Length: 466
Image (cartoon, rainbow, N blue to C red; front, side, top):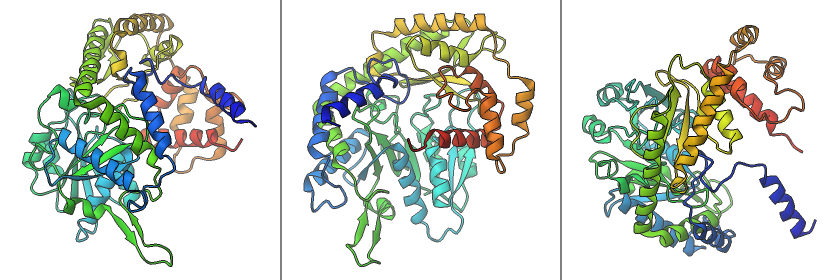
């Protein structure tokens, strides 16, 4: 195939994806609304994509750019001259490295654990799974969804190597009481997950949450979120080099080069790093302040509009640019149907299943690109609610619900899974569904471990060689 033909095919494939610009996809993507930012990031990515971050002595440009980004992030998040950091591929890698560093700093602990609020990002459960650390989830306030400092401190024991809090939490967009938690900890490492808020909260001034809080030992922040950089760039900061050292890996136990890694990766393309470096330098502090203000103003206006709609309510008190809303009990319509109706109108809002005191809800990640289109969103949301009200609640067939309840995630067979797919209308060559309300309602009847297994099986069915 010619290069032109390949690119034409790629454009055709991309036409079926959710839009990444225009503020209509309120999860997964972050849009500054500045076209030159995207063009700059793409150009910088192309200039450095063939460089390899594995060896900074071979590619000193990447070393310089990484140090520049770490320094900028440290200044933004209250760091000192002692603060150090690493650029990673994303928030999950940053969070995993924070757990790894904490674990390996305590070789004297035979069964280490990490204490985290139940609203902490699932990346920490992934880290616990990968690194043999026990996660100790602590219930949050049932109304505000914020971590409870006294409960967090009470969960800490002699085997705790790390305590985690969110700034803000992804699910509800609320800020945990960082300073209050830190004040109750006695020398235990304390990580603040600011992956989604670290590049916007400092401009909104909600109070100290980073290294300006005594006791905070590490902070993660994603540049591909509210720094509006191309995908694949996050920063993990440590208060000093001694705290970072256990994160590093070295091996001379083979006949090749001595392997030295600062992150979980070995070979790292210089493309994402250069793209982030270029975008951050171009937008600058003043530019980010304007983008943060625009995103926050949009979120405030959207929140007010949601709260004015009969039957909807916002969960907690989101202080940044994320929010989640649910349906009042007895409202007579299904939230997942609202999501489908919004999709029909060109908007993607993210369904979230019920968990403990958090009811099923729809998540919104609001960006600067949403400023100016708030009323358009709210008009379509009102129409979607009305359509859902006319459709009525989604009712799961009792026999299907009984079938799901009888499944054991530990012994789920391919035949059982195929039966469930067929019952959900996902079997055979049905392809990806266009509406998800009935499927989500069915999944909502499944306990968490079973839902995990079912979705992993579905994911496995999607990823097959073509």
